[in-house]
Image (cartoon, rainbow, N blue to C red):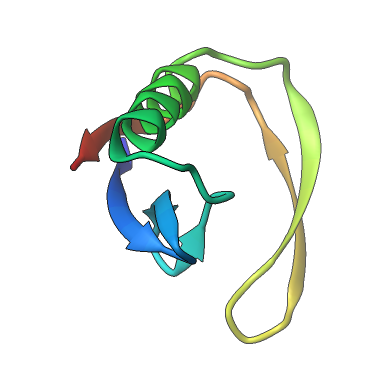
Length: 79
């Protein structure tokens, strides 16, 4: 199982949560960004429906694969 960590950081004149190099929208307060990050982390645990998915990797190549919908990552928040 993959493990991911959302981080709450100062960003764009406010606060945001980020995963890797990707930032969320800005929030006015640390508390608001933390609450949003916790909500997003909880949603990562909810299984989805089986589906074919497409994604682009770091080198710009596109991939298509089947997702069973139940292989959710273990997500948490580091503030």
